[in-house]
Image (cartoon, rainbow, N blue to C red):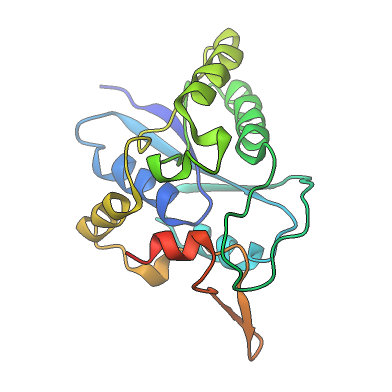
Length: 195
């Protein structure tokens, strides 16, 4: 059975990490050749996410691209609430479609979950359907395999695959401590991942 390339958008956080674990651990059942794509942009935790991304299954092909992204000022360090960047997933998926089409990659996975749907419009099933209509002319299918999972289920999957909490990064407003950054522990991303 021949393998087909699978492009996985990887932020370095828990949601996308579970997708990588599924792809790697399902190789015996599905003939995937996972390729990890990470986008960097001007946000406070860029270094931490990039490090987490690079340490995710180093044996796989990792591609990191810089994107221009515009957003309102993030809330202060440690402030509760979502960190909504308008159309962030739409922008990243549009670039991923372009990349996939140029490299004959038929499938893109990204880490939308059920827990994200209230705050993030581009994590909802109707958004995925709309993006698939746009990507169809290029023969590309966008999937969100974790779309039905809440954060607790994501972490259960990561524990099953023996991924430790320190191996992922999901905080958007890290605190600076002695030239290092630590997760704030109070933003929505930190709270929802502290299960």
